[in-house]
Image 1 (tube, rainbow, N blue to C red):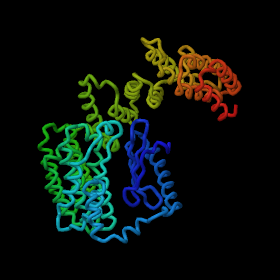
Image 2: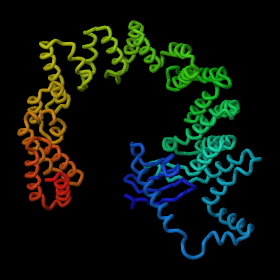
Image 3: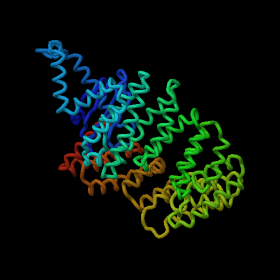
Image 4: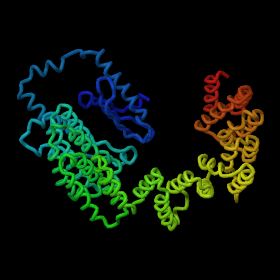
Length: 534
């Protein structure tokens, strides 16, 4: 995997960037080191893991690069330090200026390093960031596949964090303001509206730094408060994540500065929203609720919730409060009114969190008919373990025998195919033999692999026989390494069954003869035997 690293370089002290050729394109990985440990990091790969596997891999490559540099020492020949010591100041100045004119990376590095010296010019950061963004080239194919990193923003925001660590909050604030304002202006000019989904994090990053600054006692919160109020209502922020981030920052400082102004601003924003049940209205109301809770005024927060039950999330929160307080009549009214309205929507015909609340109340009140009705609704379309057992508990033993058969017939209705809800019911009922027979009726290797643990201990010989039959058919019909790895997985399942190891050895030997021309299969089976000591 190290061979797939296209580029690895240290962009500034302890900050590294890599390009990696992955399965879905070229990924950009950035790692900031804290000593020898990973500090901040990012990767544009689509993995849902956190951190993804590329972070550790690139860190290992960085360690290797650092070790090489330490052991290699100075290259033979003329040292660059000697040349620079012999050059005059004017020669160095002319050289840097000439190269920076034609080398954007060097130009950006000079600006990044020395812009702070021009303190008299308050617009210096905006000019630098704005120009860099206007010169930015985006590979649209790359961002559609793997997302986008904007180096100029990453570098300047890292610079802002450095200033915060050095307690130079004024410079940190100026950089964040420049990144916010110039990025919003740049984003407004982009023709591709889908771009925002791939760079949304840049709308949040400078605000997080400003929030870190705001909590410091040495910072005047009024400056940030006034900045938010004056800046956030500009047209370029409308409909962006930045607008909401302005409000969050405002909330951080409003308690110290002017809470009434913050609430009044939210009321003004809410008055401009036509649909008071919309997501936009909910966000504004939620900000007021969060502010009062943060200010330790829960009564005001609950009052706002009670006044806005047209928004489903607030209605649900209030219903949950009533349930906790055992005000079941109040809770049921809220729930029933919502469900009645929901039933008018033909697309919403499955139980959800509201039905779960109804079930919770029914259980607390001991209302068996209601418990049975609601829990049955949850398992009507598809088996769910939790609600199945709740449903079962509403029947006596004799009643349950009939209800169980009715449920199974309901799942099998109008279908001659395998139904996993039937199998799941039989697992829950520990009906091993009946489940085994059901699997045999609809035999595939995937079905038996999913359910064999429920009956293999009681019926090992038949389980292995069915496994073998299904696996023979699967191997005959499927070609390719992915399928071969699955075959090895199924064989691994069989080893754990009594008598399975001997049968697996027989099957593997048979496959090596029958499929001797499938070299990839032979390779997988050979490795499988080695790993499992067969």
